[in-house]
Length: 199
Length: 273
Image (cartoon, rainbow over all chains, first blue to last red; front, top):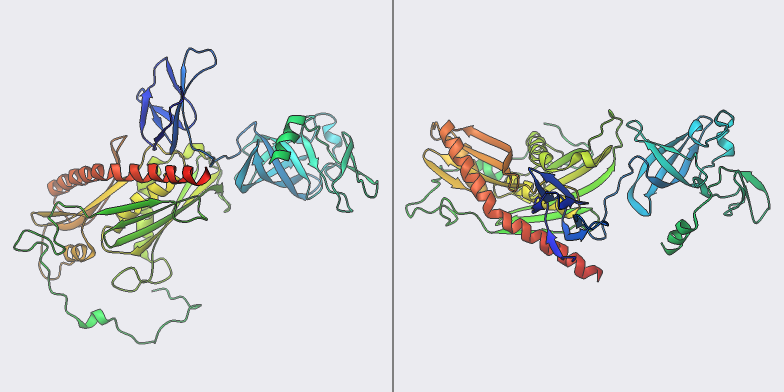
């Protein structure tokens, strides 16, 4: 079924009728589906076998930018009592070629007892966090949130400079000094760990 | 003229050697109905296109139209660093630069007015073709450098930038093609060289009513003109006629651009496997 043909931007691929729908890398105009990127043309029946999904694959280079509801991985750069600044490193499993600035506000850190959040007991600079994009924010940065069990600090460094082990949802322990430090710990899903190790 | 104080400039008083030579008015077309470089008036120059020439850039392109050589790099989409108003649409920035040695007269390192003007024209030609709403809060930077200018630099730059954008994987509605013509009296020559461009715009020797040059950028699949720029004094009917001629010439270049992109994709495939 998969046809391997290269198409260029602006190339007409098919009629946009009730049998064919445009997927990634395409756009439709005047009842036709056109390619919008340089890549390989692929036609695939949809799951219920009623329509044919036409998409264009660019190959290994993917241009991703964070959009609302995406799960992103970010590094904390700056923490203050109201918010913490971070730089977004990857969207889902796709690394970004250039970092984007993000912001976790105090009220978006956790779902319960929002008013009792202390930023210094949740994040520290250098931590790798998993967060969800809440909004595109202002001109400066994206607004991120960690108010879910799966979201929060994934990798935290202790004061001794060792990667810590989570002991509860709000504490992590340093394996070297056995000191406990406060973090908003993420309950990282096992399938996600798999992809991190492979990468 | 702004001078760059951080660079060592030449002697304080210097004259261009061109000041001492007379430029006789040249005839655009000889007795044998051919142009200075032996082309017919409606003949395009041979074209060479290649994508992926700059490894650091996200996408890049190189174009050679006989002696006109232009290289282009595309970076992004990346974060907008300057503090600006929030926009859900992406931004496109264009930077057009002649290298100091590219023209007959030496260019400065800093961008001069003509280069700024050409940057804006390039941006206007490319902006309608890029799906900017797919890149909220991001910017795409295009850097065009003319390595050697032998006329029609803007049209070469537009084609090159569109090639670079497509090779960078930026979502576009269509490719952009461009073509230019020069006119004098009843004569219209396509794809003018630098000498021809200059001869047309140089009005010292003869007061003409109809002399100038024109560049048209065209989206072939959408069948729309994205930008027109013209220079000189041209009659209205000549303008419409030459615009049609430019569009025809753009369509002649379309397969070349397509082939260059397909070849780039195949080369990349061969590299990875």
